[in-house]
Length: 231
Image (tube, rainbow, N blue to C red; front, side, top):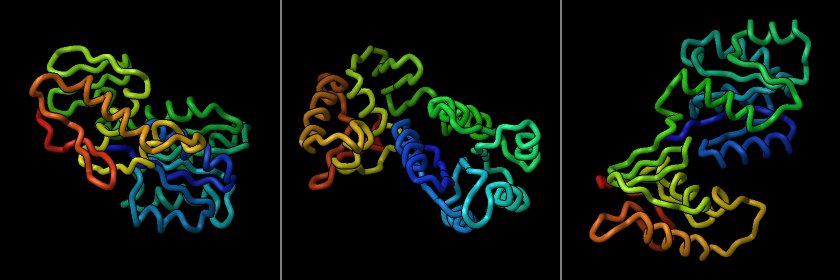
């Protein structure tokens, strides 16, 4: 299961940057730029973590944090506050309101992602598991080692990322465009047939003999990792 992140940030370039980077790491993101919209979004689809800017149009981040912590349905959702306020008293105020962490702008996006993983690991370890296992196929995200039935499988960086993206959501069907955006990036133009080529290579490496193919082709749409795959 992919962790769901709600990014509440009114600076559009930063909002887009965060969404892109978190999705590239396998997270599912939703975004909001106005504080008044957040409570409705949380009710519609409860996130696993909220990244919340302090200064927002409508309700401020600090007031939103108070409201979320006051309700039994949302009080345990982890929150990371983003702010340009760096003074010690402001940090204390943000944490006292109920934020789990506090990041001062400008910040390192990889560090923010690492902090998010750390918080999610404490709140729900299964969401950010560092080893993905489906059937006899295992992917260690720390060592970037892939094995099937105990044998090592050597993948290129692109193949690894493609397999990881599919394994994180068994059963979910991805279009070729979605896979291109997730693996190669939104700003790079590549023909959709590139996905077919890499899927073919991936199958050739991970499948041996009569081993069942864990990757399912959905005709006219794209690909999915077979949720019934047992190895």
